[in-house]
Image (cartoon, rainbow over all chains, first blue to last red; front, side, top):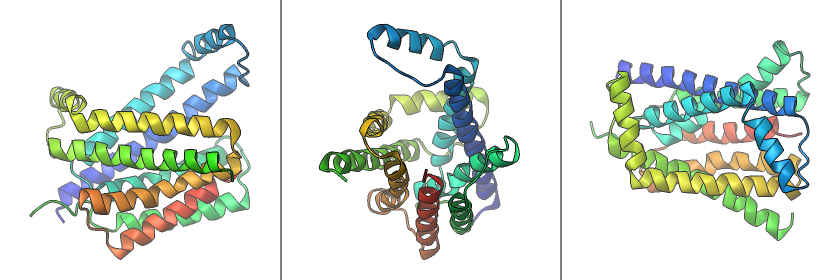
Length: 136
Length: 124
């Protein structure tokens, strides 16, 4: 396996994980600021959409998720889907860890078990060849 | 689990996996990105969004997204969200049979662990 290919795959995996988790965190911060949604009429919906699309957090979330999509597309131009998809599951680890260590959220034991299992799975997948379809 | 929940869960998982498989097919057709200059990347995305596989991918991912939203409106969230972690396994099968990727035992084991782990992390 050539070193350059592996290196650029890893760089893009890091970007994918950072953009997808920060995007989801920004979106959730934005929606929490807006508060619980109760849409009873068309007017409520218009008001909600107005709040959503004037929120800075929401726009940052959308931007981060667009960057995520771009990185995901670029890395799939050479790497296996069955490599990229599980290997980027570290996002599910990063979000609760950020919540725990930076935002002081409590992580239940079952989630810690899940985080550990994901890490083992990601390490296993990342140990395999990123591309198995290229004729070389 | 009602029949409706099962149906929408299946649509969510299948549409998302199929969408990402089509997206991969579109990217593989374009070929490996080697030039990371902005102008070259811009041309890459321009070509990508003109491809039929990419448009099919966007359609399928949209179906998956709305089926998931619909599901969340009535189904038990603590069951439905973890259950969507099965997308990793379905995606692995799609990669093997539709994209011709060769999945080693280590990769299958990793996919299975990630799927179980994500399901656990998503429990309420």
